[in-house]
Length: 515
Image (tube, rainbow, N blue to C red; front, side, top):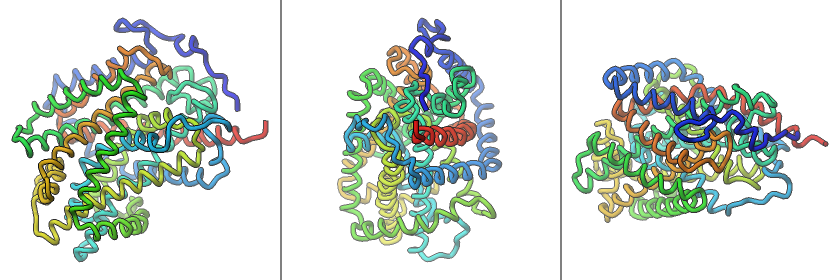
C-alpha cells in the first residue's frame, strides 16, 4: 500500500489563529474543553467530588467486563502478530536501521511506560492482595497467599498493559515510517479509512487521544505527588497536605518544562537513562539487603504463578471478588488504556528500524520481566518483613488507605533507610518529569496535526496544562477523582484501539502483498 502522505500545507490547511499561535483545530477543541473542565471542577469542588465518586462506582461496576474483554483482545492480537509472517515487516522499510541503541530504547520505553506506577504500587499492591486475596481464595496458608499476592500484582503490570501499549505503538510506527504519514493517531486508521482520516472523523480520533492521554497522565502525576509528599513527611516532617501536593506538582511541572523545551534527545532520553540506572540501583539494594535467596527463587516461581493465574484473573464471568475486579483490575485496565496513546506514540517515535516482531516481542517480554522482578523484590520483601519479622508498619499504612507510605515503611526496616527513602523520592520525581515531558511532546504532536516541530509555546502550554489538570482533580476529589478520570477516558479509547487493530492488520497485509 502506498499512502498519499499529505503535504505540510495540507496538514495545516485548517489551522486557525488562537492564543497568538497558528494552531490545528484539534488544539482548539482540546484546549477549550479541558480548560472549561478545569474551571467547572474548581468552581464546584464539593459537587464535583460527589460526581467523581458516582462516576467511578458506575464505571467499575457496569463496564468491568468491557475493560477485561478489551485487554484480552489486545493480548491475542499481539500474539497473533508474533506468530504471523507479518512480524517480519520492518518499520521504515527493509533497509531501515534503529535510531537508538537497545539500551536507550528500553530506558525510554520503561521510563515513559509505567515506572511511576511501580514506585507507588510496588509495595502496597502485593500487601493489599495478601490481606484480601483475589478469586475468592480464603484460608490459604501464608506461603500460598504470598505467591498469589505477588502473581496477581504482576498480572496488573504484565502482558496486558504492554499489549495495549504495543497496539498503539505498532500502528503509529507503521503509519509514520512505512506509509510516510504524520505521526498522529488518525494516521493509524489510513489503511481502514483512507483519505477520510484527514477530515472531521480524524479530528475526533485525535481529540479522544488527547483527552485519554491528558487524564491518564494527570492520574499518574497525582499519585506521584501524593507519594512525594508522603516521603517528605516521612523523612523531614513536611506536612502531607493538599497545599504540599499542589506545590510539588507545580515545582515538578516547571522542571518538566525545561526538559520539554530541550527536546527528545537532550531532555527525555538523558532523563530516562538516568532514571533507569537509579531504579535498578534501588532494586539491587533491596534485593541485597532483603531476603535475597528467597527473592531470587521467588522471582522465577512468581513467573510460573503468574502464568497459572492469568486466565482466571482475566475472566470476569462468575467472579465474586468485586474489590479486586472493580477496584484494581477495571481501574488498571482503564488507566493503561488512557496511557496507550501517550506511551504508544512515544515508543513509535523511537522505534524506527525495528521489525514488528522486535517491537511487539520486546514489549511483551522485557518490561514484563522487569515489572515482575520489581513486584517480587519490593512486594515480597514487605511480606517477608511481616511474616518472618513481625513488622506491621507497611500493613498499617495499607489498612489506613495510605498506599503512598508503603514504600517508605518497607525501606525503614532496611539499612540506610534515610538514604534509600531519599532515593525513592528522587525516583518518583524523575519518573514524574519523564512522564510529563514525554506526554507533553506526544500531545503537542497530536494537536499540531502530526508535525514534530510545533512551536515551543505550544509544548509549554500542554506541559503546564497537565499540571493544572492534575491539581484540579486532586482538589476536586482526590484519588477517586483521578481514577474516575482515567476510567471515563479509557473506555471510549478502547473502542478506538479495537478499530486500530483491524486497520493495522489490513495495512501490514497490504505491505507484504506483491506489488
